[in-house]
Length: 271
Image (cartoon, rainbow, N blue to C red):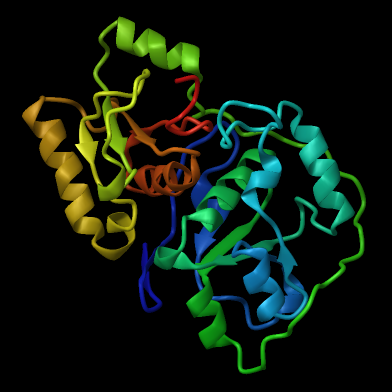
């Protein structure tokens, strides 16, 4: 579903064992009553301090990374510790959350956070770009930090159906199974890096999926057709360096009905 909010925003559909993402993740403007949701600011800390929506909580996607891992996109090994940290800053999986960032002007931080919250088992996730949030607000943005009250501890309920492990990916390649690899790194980062992810099948800038979705979709459809691949059964794997943009595009691919998989570690995993 496309919602015209200045840029194309999408209602994503994604299959999992219990829920569909269309029931959980929705891209839209902020609710009129901001007290109904936990507000997450996915921009930089300096931007958050300089002007933020009232009661918004700054959260960096990097907080979820495994310390000392080879890739910044490597998730922490114990998801329950992430849940415990979130509870300390007032974020509970049963409370709807609204994430806002910089949209196409940013790095896709809000898309990465949306995927992580979905992975942890959150029940309702709203996400939008910062410009939409700012346009909605008729109040002056607040400045300075905000210190939320902690909430009761909660248990994670992982949704990991479409996470692709390194071992599974290597097995796909070894068995020469049909798959499409989409490189989202951008024009300035086309150097050939060693590792399991090269060569790729398509190179599409991640913002193309937001600004010109039909072009991105046609590129994928044409490739599938040229190889006589079945859209409903051919895995499509988006890749990026740390897993921000690939998380964002993964959700879009699922909304388009593709058999998509997400590699949390992004492009640089175990190069």
